[in-house]
Structure formats: structure tokens, C-alpha cells
Image (cartoon, rainbow, N blue to C red; front, top):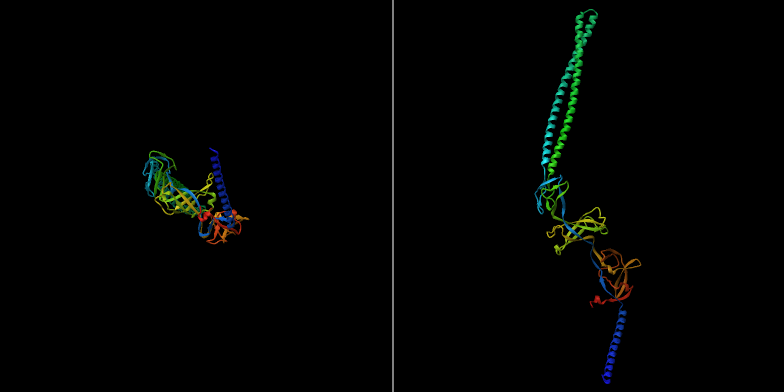
Length: 428
């Protein structure tokens, strides 16, 4: 490159650098002017209006749909399952026979118990008859005793009379001895009749004891018969309610123990949702608390529900408590085992003032907001109400329609000038 070309290139570079420097200086002056203008405008803020509306504190949980009244059905007696009469999905009625346990031995026991009752009844009948005979003997013995005592009294009177006559030689000795003999026989007869009456009384007492024992034996036999009947009845597994068979746990030919589940049944026309609620939220919930149930299978529909049961004890590991939510309206889209979301309405307020939580700041341990009035931020102390973490109820100082700052709160002071930021004006 010759000397003249080099000089031309140098001059061109100088012109370009000079032009760039001139543009930079002009932009710098414009920026300084803009900053001066912004300083004159004040602090840029975003605002929102205080609203008056209904307000709720909602706890969101997830849970599982279950048939209401779900319960497991088991046999009350162990043994081999000889018959199963239903399958999963079957609709069953209250009292319907679901399964049968082998009853051959129990039938034999029932027959034996029935025979024992029959024998005990016959024995009781015999003891009652024996008592009746003993009572009749006692009546006869007492009558005979009375007769003997009357005869004895008569002969005693005759003996005492003849004794006096004999002592006066008024009657012969033979006559006196005859009267004396009859008197002794009458006395002996009284003693025999007394013994007979005493024996009859004893027989009645023994008969009464025999009746008591026979009745006790009969009662025992009848109890054994009833127990045998109930055990035989327990071989029939029946449904306690009108329901649907949700699950079947056993098969024919298997042996089952007492209390071992054979079926799980439920009422298919009623659903409930089980959720595990944290201890802190649980304090705000109670029986009857409203809830809304949502699920993808429900599309955009929310089902109304309410808490129907709160478990009495918490899970020590998860520190949660099971809460049961009953659906008020049956929805055929839901199925047992479906996953759903549950919005629990812990608190509900009507027609209250609400503001965003981010509009509130603390100053000297009090809650404040910046009210925007005539281009200035005015610090206003407020009284807070319930909050859901995003919005808060305001109980004083503000009115519906008031504008408050929700940005740059740290840059604001009482009565400082403000202007709407570019974001609020809709600028990029």
C-alpha cells in the first residue's frame, strides 16, 4: 500500500471514531436528561385496587376416592369354605348368602344337643311326677298322723279313767290291762305316723332338689343346643347391608380362620375421600367443614362435599391425621381408587376488603401499605385480618377502589412522589 492510500485510510478511521464518540456523548446527555426527568417524576411503582369480595381460606390436599361404608366380611367360625355364591362386582342385598363353611360336624353337634334337651325334659318331667307322688304321700301321712293322735287321745282318756277305777277295785284287772294295751298301741301308732310324715316331708324336699337339678340340666342342655344352633348358623356368611362386592379374598376349598376377611363390600352409590391433613391445618377443620373435589375425570366440574369424620389419632411418623370427606352428589365418572384434589374451606368471609399480601410492609412492628393519592405514596397503617398467603383481609383505613403500591416498597417513603412504572403502563 502506498503512502497516499495509508493516509486516506487513517483519515477515514478518525472520522468514524469521531462520529461514534459524538453519538455516545449525545446518548449520555439524553440519559442524564431522562434520569433528571425520572427523578422529578418520583419512584416508579405498580399499583392495584383494593377490592371488596367474598374471601376463603382454603387448604389444598390430594386424596383417594373410596366407596362409602366399605367394610370387610369374615366368617364367625373357622373351617373349610365349601361354597362361594358371589363374585367381585356383584350387587348384593342385606341378608344375602355369600359363602358357606363346612357344617357336617356342627350338624352332628346340634343333633346331639337336641337329644340332650329331649332327655333333660323327660328327666324334669319324671322329677315333677316324683314330687307330686311325694306330696300326696305327705298329705296321707299327715292325715294318718292326725287320726292316730286323735285315737291316742281317746285311749289315753280311757286309760286314765280305767286306772282310777282299777285302783278303787271298781273294774276287773283284765279290763284295765286291755285298756292299757290299747293305749300303748295308740301311742306306738302315733310315733309310726310321725316317722312316716317326716319321711314324706323328706321325700318332698328331695323331689324339689331333683326338680331344681333337672331344670339346671335342662337349661344347660338348651344353652348347648342354642350354641350349637348359632355355630351352625355362623357357617353361613351373609351380607349385613345392601351393597356391592368390591373384593373377594377366598376360594372354595380353602380353610378360613375366625375373623379372616373373605369379602370386602361397599355401598356403590356413595363415595368418600380420604386425605392426610397436617397438624397445623387440622386445628382449623371440623366435622361439617365444606370442601370441593376436583379431578381430571370430572373435567371442569367441582363436586361439593364436607368433612364427615376426623380420625381421633394422628400417624406418629407422618404427623398427619386422616380426614374423611363425604361427597354430597354422586358422580358416575368417579371410581373407587381414583386420585382427586380436595380443597378444604377452612374459613369463609362475605363481602370483605382484600389486598395482595405483597402490598403490606412492616414499620415499627405495625402493618402498613402505601396508598397512592395525587401522585404521592401515603403511608397508611392497617389492621390485618385472615390471610391465605396471597391475599389478606383489611379491617380498617382503606376503602374499595383505593389504589395501593405493590412494587418498589423499599424505595418509597411517606408523601414521596411516584409514577406508574412502564410495566403497569403496558410498555415493554
